[in-house]
Every structure is written in structure tokens, then in C-alpha cells.
Image 1 (cartoon, helix red, strand yellow):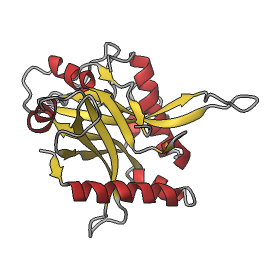
Image 2: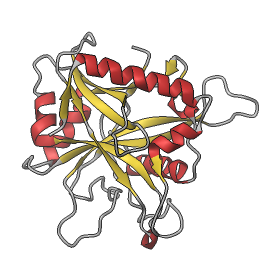
Image 3: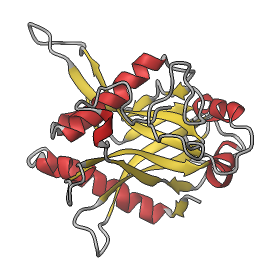
Image 4: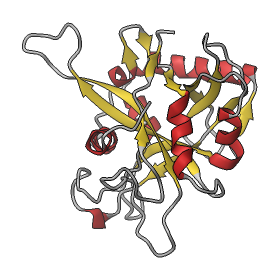
Length: 263
């Protein structure tokens, strides 16, 4: 079950994220260290791929909130544990009403890290590359695939940039999703036991409103929501849905959320 945190804890963790981004603007290596871990003992480097929430114990309670109109996904930074060298990035979910007011507790997710095995080939962009995906209305497979693969590639190539967590309105604090983004995946879930809802990290490339001449692509971190049922016994573990949006026992992917800020 995902943890429920208090308002005091939420305020503390969101303030820590804002301070971290401010410092990372001057020390970008801190951002890289937050989302990646160096390889050791012959193992390849790993990166944080997503944050997960248990469907039966968390998501069902979230979407059952009376008056819910949307879901807020806030970025937070937890303090490091005694045995760890760095703080921990997480996503916190909460239900909001039509006016944007919070009407549920804060649900804290669990991080998933991934180290691509050598058998997947030399490049992260290989079709077998281990990335999981999920999105207001389903998002086309190849669009989702590009977002999650670009996040993995930037992380593993040591190319994460604080500008990826910025908007025209200030530092990126999270996203607001339509309720359907979290409700629709449940239609394909069957039983909710042993199912997870993944909030995957993706990297979106686009041209800003006032580009340089010649125009240059901007990149911003986005979130992709998808149901994950886990592989069947004996099946290879992959992180990408198949071309029909399924794979890994999951369903279509959902995104197209709005950045926060603005509110």
C-alpha cells in the first residue's frame, strides 16, 4: 500500500523539491545523481523509471473520492535514508474537485529503478528496451515510446538538465490529470489484486512559442500513466507496451496532463 502523508509532510517535501531545483540550476550534477545510480560489481548503471501505486489499496480509494474531478501528481523530495547517499524523488497523488481544491489525502508512491541488461543491445532505443509506459485518453504507442525512451537515454547518457524541470511559469512542481486518465486504465484491469498503476517519467521534445533562429527543440519532463500487471511466470521482463498499447499485462497509456504551475 502506498503511504499516506500529512499536510505538514507534504509541505516539507514539496519545499525540499523546490530548493533542490534551485540548487541544481547551479549544480546540474545533483540532478543527474538524483535519478541515476552508477554501476558496480559488473552491473550497468540504473535510472529511476517510474513511481508506482497499488491499484487495490490506493488507486481505488483515490478515484472513489466523492466530488473528484481530477488528480494532482506533485513532485516531492524525501530526505535520504541513513544507508543512502542522496535524497529520494517521488510523486504524490491527490484528488481535486472542479475548482482545484484538494479533497483526498496525499498518497506517496514507490520508486522503481531499472538497469538495462546487456542482452537488450547497445542502445536504449532498441525495440526490446525495458521501459514501461501509461496517459487524458489513450496516447499513440510510438509517441509514448519516444517519451519514455528519451528519458532513459538522457538519464543513462548523463544528460539530464535542470531546464527539463522548468516551465514558462517557474519550476515544474507536477501535473494535473483528468480523472479519466486514472479511471480508464481500470477498465482493462479485471481483478485489482497484484496490479500497479505506474506514473512513468518521460521526456517531451517540442518547439517553444518563441524559438531561437534557427529554432531549437526544448525538452520538458512529463508523466505517463499506465496499468501494470507484471509479467507472467517465465516471461521476460520488459518496460515497453506492445504496439496495441498492452504488453506486460497492462492496458493503454494515458498522459496529456497540464503542468503545475500554472494553477
